[in-house]
Image (cartoon, rainbow, N blue to C red):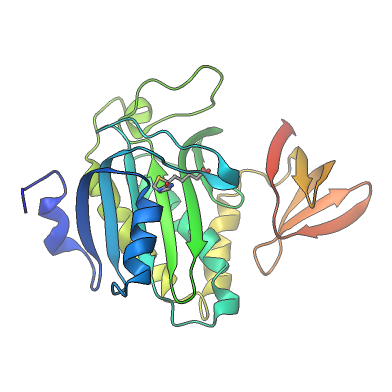
Length: 250
Ligand code: BTN
């Protein structure tokens, strides 16, 4: 295969992870899903230069400027019971936050798994499960410079003032996800502590939409399953899935 920016990390990837590099794809999640359905073994990491139909959560589009941002998806075939697979969502957020912290001092996690620096989004994650696999799709603003007006976003380059190697960032994420994803059944409480330490919402007043309701509440923290604990009108609610969360005040 033609050497590319990611060739040199091949030998450094933890077993069984390996990189497949493509110039242009529709969405790395969609193309990796096709490979997964056709029996590709765990650990394939599909990374591309350009996505024509990159997707975010809740059906939003995800823009990844060519060559500047990092867009990739990782194929997992978890051994843990399927009931535990939802834990991979927080776990992936933690892996990305830890990887980002190799380059900047402190990353925050906006539940469930947006990664931010100083309140500005630096990475988004889209986890999708199939019958016997999970695709963890990750978009990281590595060297991105121009963000659409009104978008609270940043990149590693904007934070550090330097170009950062996308291959190094990819390798850091894979190393951490490899370790964490293997232990969702045994070490989840420990991983949750890592998420809690970085939780951008704890102590904040937020407006959130869940189960088709729009409510305002105060975030108390995270519960034992990683659910959001929100005080709404004096009552503590446990929220496992929310559509939109907006911080109203610090
Ligand atoms: C979000 O913040 O809403 C999640 C964004 C996830 C984007 C990544 S980029 C690589 C992978 N392929 C996709 O189509 N989406 C994910």
